[in-house]
Length: 336
Ligand code: PHE
Image 1: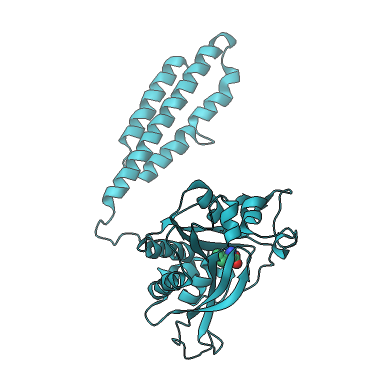
Image 2: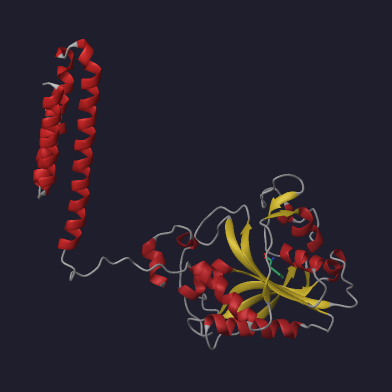
């Protein structure tokens, strides 16, 4: 083939491509010109028969042909796609994309923030990596307390750990603000627990703290938690306090909610007791006030802390804590 013949063949091929009207015709032309045994690859193979001095010009012309043919085929292909779209039956129902919904833990956290905000609480935040001072010392927890042990807590070094509770945010809040303070702090916490149906090494708590220069009493704490219990779990749910010990509160209590299933009558969920344990709480210990530079003679307050997983599990009837972390849509979509 001479250069002149090549130009004629090229013009012919482009004309054919532009005249093709069906996908099959375009495909046939692709095979004819640039397919493995097509005319352009055949020309490249035959290059060795072209006289040496003509070879560079000829080679260039063949490459140009190939490029133009491919561009023309490509343009046809795109045009076909657009045509196919227009041809589709526009009255067919659309494709259904399932709606997402919030994770149960996010729901409990957001709902809690909304409930406490109606009582004047704002949301405070703190880091998950804490100092020994904020997580233990300022919270009146001595070095020999079991929670400080290496087997209970994830330590990075002598002073730095993954917080075991959201209570260090009490310390941060008081150190950074003058009383009165009224905050809740939702967040992740860590303990060296083996994971089973009710334990996880990483879980969530919501801490609450109220400190004022006006006298604050255990009755205030109880009324706030009773309001929270009713708003979160429904009418007929209230709280009871049982004496307990926490290093950072005195007196300290464990807080039970009325079982929301039997409303206190006794059932399988509450193991026939009518009550479900949900939180720890108490009046802030004067030693904690001293650590943060507050005068215990001038201020008083209460603190409480509850597990977000625990509330979610009772509220939604979730039997296994692990379901909350497995991201299985069959589970998550049921709470939509
Ligand atoms: N931090 C305690 C715990 O994790 C709960 C608590 C918070 C108790 C505030 C009293 C006051 O068990």
